[in-house]
Length: 133
Image 1 (cartoon, rainbow, N blue to C red):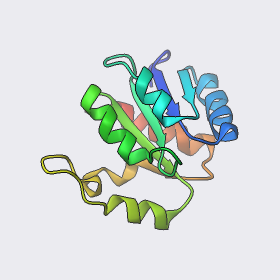
Image 2: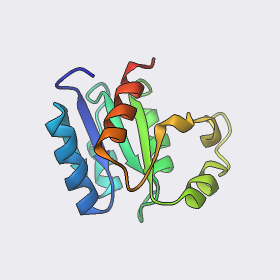
Image 3: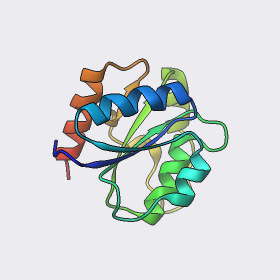
Image 4: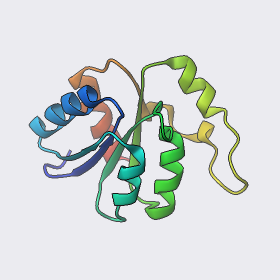
């Protein structure tokens, strides 16, 4: 992990974004939290973030749909996903995608974190993802 890396965090639960923001900032990251995926997408800039952490189950747009839209803006940024339910995670990963797009099922399962997540597990996963190319 490099201190000062920028992380975009999107979860529709305020208590989750607050808790994760504190843990990540304590570890030296710069964190921009959002509770609305549509606002996060509208303010997302290419080349600005080193990592994006998305909740999978959100009201306006699920995290994998948001992932697909953000990939259109910046195909270099790394992603992690958090979810409260294994069943929902499995269901969403099976969704059909538009022709020519990367299927969700091909996403690296190591990038999916199950809520509740410990700070240690969160930081270990982020460090591992940040080291990957």
